[in-house]
Length: 76
Image (cartoon, rainbow, N blue to C red; front, side):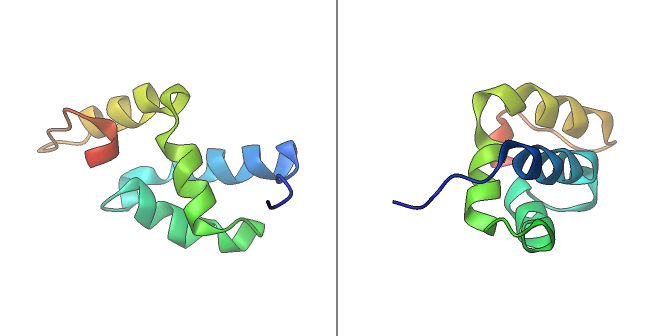
């Protein structure tokens, strides 16, 4: 089992990905783009983005983009 990422690193990576999520076709694409720059594996950052605590943020961001219809955040 791998050691968890420090909470400050996890939070910065997650916040950066959430702030710029609208620039990517999916949460996973944002994770691939930003995870390595924080030393966080894209798969792990993608899991953080899929947590229920972030679902409402992703849905709200998708709803703010014209022409986006996102019924379920993990499918955005």
